[in-house]
Length: 213
Ligand code: MN
Image (tube, rainbow, N blue to C red; front, top):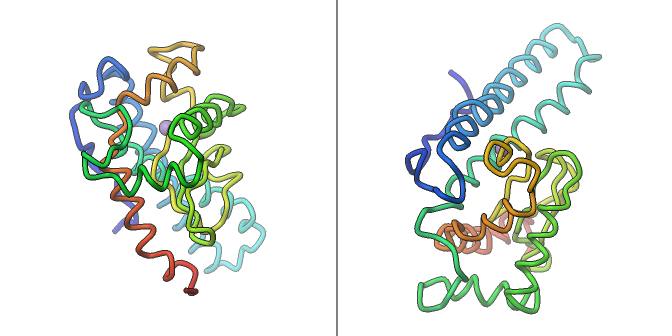
């Protein structure tokens, strides 16, 4: 029995048009995300085999593969739910996401400042990476992280609540080399309800995550 499984998409392939076309969603979910799930499961098996054989020379490479594939699986699992065809705009108290709106203002000064920072963080990734809004439990605030590949440049303990995939596979079939245009378009499909639920859950569990008050 595999440890990790590919989650179903919460919508059909065309649900995010015109921001993301169906071909991208199909390949991205069915091929790319699936490959990270398989990679994480395969790596766990290889680690077990290495332990059985006491093949400790394999550990360094396998630990890197585990971090890459597992982080890829987790980020994509969040990514699909962070988006909806009915999304976009700003989080507003009137929509029941006032706590998130307040946290963004408190953490970044303004929604506009936050939006520009996350857009820049995603758009200026060199090679492959992500722009991430994360809850940081020590400060109790939200931070933006610019993630290399799926796993680098991350602060330990932070919990991703909104993720922008800036890998070329996320946009190239539709946006070609215009990564900035893709990231800017992404704001029109953000599911603030989902982001707010993730924020509330992370905040609720902050003490558990850190074993501190
Ligand atoms: Mn991706």
